[in-house]
Image 1 (cartoon, rainbow, N blue to C red):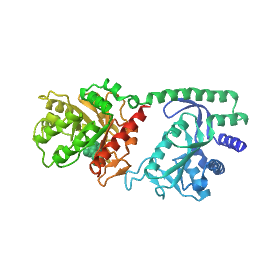
Image 2: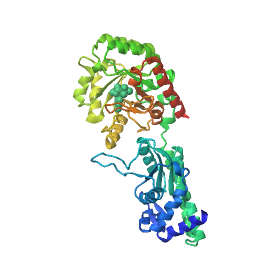
Image 3: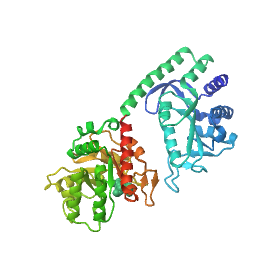
Image 4: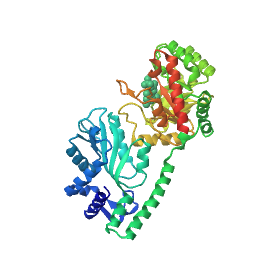
Length: 471
Ligand code: S5P
């Protein structure tokens, strides 16, 4: 294999797949080596040799059911392999079509199919990880990623950390050694590339450290001291003391049933969330009962109104009307869609209220096709940074780093699932790993036959995932 690889390295050099000089990378950095496997489409013999050598790395060729090529360079290699082995090929688009089926994957496949990913170069590993996520979303099982060149810039580690096995034909260093021993390059070119690799590795390490979100590895008690909003501080303290991150969504339409549920859930939850406008028999007596349970069992009450109007209107919706939400809800949810004026309106609605209050901005929704993407998310995060009333964000992933703010994540069930109306669920462990501090569970509990067991199961799974996340 070594001789074969050396010959292949020389062929790649001869057809200008590997070039030396001074080049600029996509992000404007200087690099002494440039690798472009796209030229292989013009060199059929070498394309076949490379593809076949790559396939020899497969650890379980007979059990592979799908060959997935990553556009563009690796498509032609995946094609050769699929041809040789007569296995079907799938392709993951770079962008989903914005018309028709919006499918990201092209090909014929079924959930459970075992798949191998073919890629030309791995640098940080992000593009392979994106493909892995999309394949997994469709239920495919990934055996491994076969890659021609590992640039030794963190990709292998990142993939392995995410549970993706990777095999490469060459590392950049091996390629350099083959070319040096074949006299294709001189010692100074070799040294330049090896030096470049060393400095690059160091800067990749620094970038990775900077990317780490320490919010996720800091405990609630320490974070309580960093919270700007007194209620955020209180949530951290409650979670720490009661050892629970459970926010129960008591989405029931009878006041009595909510009270009954709060009575059994009280000792195990940090927050009880309601939608006041779905309760058939709302009354101030109900609020009194709920308040007294919240004091008895030490949980906070959240009204999930998702306010979303101009400041003047929300100030009235918050403090007036039948519900007078500002008077009893410790926490509310707010769509940032109207801009910062909505927060000013809510602050105005608190004029006559002396107790502490907090709001969660709905920065990213759990439902399929939600419009909360891109710059909407960015602007919502910045609205949160600029207001003391904001205790955190409702979102699905670790979008922010501020350890004094709280991530509230809905869409939680014991198994990954969805309902018929767009709701998407993830498991307790996966939402916590995606940054959830408080996790919202509704029907997972309200529709369980044995509610107290369900409450304790969610509480325990969430808490142990939080403990694991800390370490
Ligand atoms: O993006 C969101 C935001 C919220 S607050 N997705 C959600 O599901 N919610 C709320 O969380 C929703 O209104 C409901 O009260 C709860 C989820 O309930 P479940 O029964 O689907 O667990």
